[in-house]
Length: 125
Image 1 (cartoon, rainbow, N blue to C red):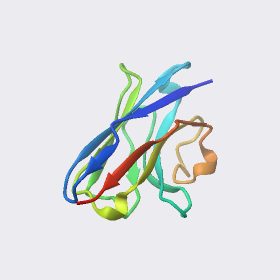
Image 2 (cartoon, helix red, strand yellow):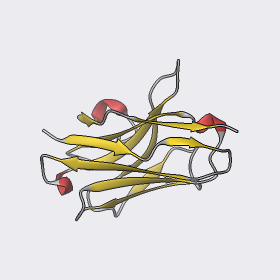
Image 3 (cartoon, rainbow, N blue to C red):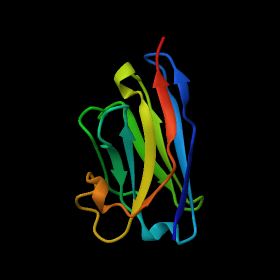
């Protein structure tokens, strides 16, 4: 089992920044590729960003490319999501997730086995 705990959400004005963290425990962190997803009220959960086990490969949803950065610190068993130039449409509950195996297809929520409880991000003036 892997336990994931997100933190860092909150209320921010449009154009502002937030940094989300997701701390993992229970199994060796380097066994897993990590992803961030988000879900707005009334909408399906959508992919935001993913990073492979070493941190050497990342990819992003088009809607956040150039504004968000995913990174990981394997010594701290933590994955981060730096969010800049935030927009009201970024408002959602943000979830981190972990998966083993291949890194391909990491934009699909169904391939991730472990999920955190989520942290709310609200972008509003």
